[in-house]
Length: 399
Image (cartoon, rainbow, N blue to C red; front, side):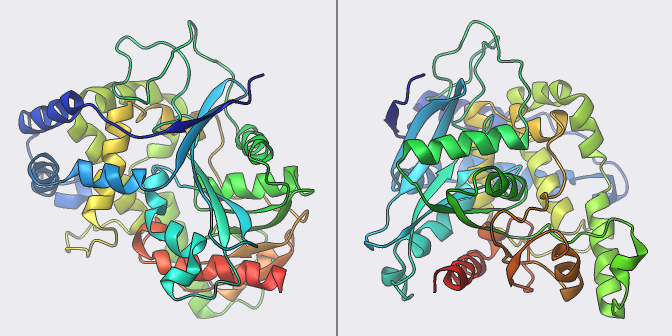
């Protein structure tokens, strides 16, 4: 097994950028169905966003923003893993592995890396700082799955392809083992872990798997979701029950994307690979659905800056990973973070006290932030709240 760690820099060929813009300009637009947002992402909304992507969005500026952070690749368990490794100037910084969401990428973390690694420059107490490792999940962006394709993904992410695809399924545990090996390979003997959404699942499993090295695990949310046991809701207030009702409706979704991805991801992958608008529509729908679908047609304020949305879409497009990023569903890894008592746990956006009471049944909860984010993609919409929560959690552990 090779343990080589190779410096990496994003450098999308100009031909690929030109091709993206050409495809966007030549989009064959669908007819608008009656019902507005009730039928899905409206044509007018998507067309305006796609026009901005083609004519005004500055990919090179976003590429430079990503390249401002040191990046590397290494191979673990046959999988190429891309990661940012941002070292703090503070001598006693704690290593911290941060795992992004689905359907997102390391671009999600751009606004939290500076404050976490260099708090002094951001007006924060330098006594608590982190060396941040931020990997791209397997099958996402610059961590493409090995194996041939009819037309290899363009840009540097395609890399060398094996003769046959790796058919072993990815599970949360397999990713967690990969992360544990990555941190060992980087020489981080003691480290913390943080994640959101899919990253929260990996973080909880990593803590349970590697408690000898993980000092604490803090996620954004997902703990304490009721299982149906009536005893869990004993003493719940009317506000808490209303909050749970809203959460249940939001988690249920209206598109049925989960069962479809669990059964037929390849079918959607053809559209993602051939049409940037198809890829964009799907990503926009996920962001909107997670944050509260505007079914009545009422305009909803965008919680995430559209340049960040398009940076994420561009990463999926240039690397051809729209289909492979859905492994969390077809490999059965979607769900909620597993309970674990191996290391202390925290939640930066845990929700009502009711959820904490339920979460404490299976976790050693030492920190619970009850603030609400304007978006499921918390680090994109409210990065300062993530920084605050992570710092407060580890401040409890390290004081």
